[in-house]
Length: 407
Image (cartoon, rainbow, N blue to C red; front, side, top):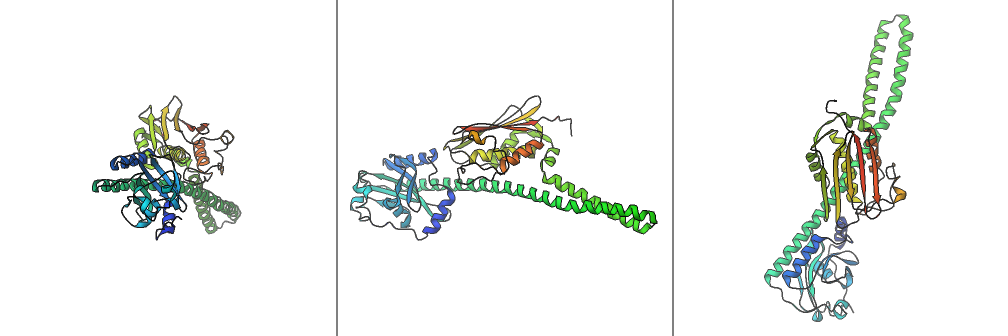
């Protein structure tokens, strides 16, 4: 009979923390494979794993020397390691260890004998999983090998912390985008609600002035002039609110000379790439004359989507900028999910949400691409999509080319 595996004292909080990282079933990653390979080589042991453990499963993020990608938690050596509180758990011979001598991993075809695992402790103090080495025969690790295994564990933790930070940055960026859209809509509604009574006040004041003017009451006329002037000023402010709520009108008014290399650098800092992803920039021109804020907002949204809707472990995103005689042409190409043919005509519609969640298991809002298209339309530009499901997408944006002689 298999002994019931122990649970860490902070198990519920640990599981909640693990979920924040999006590590389970996150696919293979060359950087993690490299670390696992080093662990195997340093320890002289053929099997090495980087694992993460949820309520019921042990998921192998990296698996060197075995084709298995997961295990039941109740059969896992690593679940003992994360509950042990030890810096490293070593089982010299599982066949004589009462915790494992009845475990099918020991008595079955896998015939495991030796195990050494280092818990992966995150910044909050929770054990997410382990880096471990295993074999079908006994071993003795020397002090240098134990130290190396602990160092590799710290490298894995650094990478998963970076992954979580990237996820949080992407989420924050999307929330900011959604918040900006809501603010714009609120400003538009508020401006219309204010403008209607102000217009009524102006018309009434003008009617009163024409009526009282025939009576020769100078004081009343002056008060009405003040009232009319104030109402016109308020209406002018409301019109500015409406203009602001349609942000593109303000964005296109501020055209400037843009260093393309600087634009690319800002985008690179604003859109962190998950592990295994690369972002490449290409430009046939060193400078362009346009609205810097508008270009950044368009490219930022398209880049964020290119990351979110990419199901590949090795993600490739390419951004290019070029000019022809009449237009500035932006292209954002990815090797992600792609867009199904029946959705390609709909993705720019407000509130349209595709059938699948993104790589972080979040559903779309139906706001981002419709907002981008609205901005491009007000810039008197066009946006096109070329996509093959399962292979990737290319978004092509054509914006009018402005002369530097125009203000």
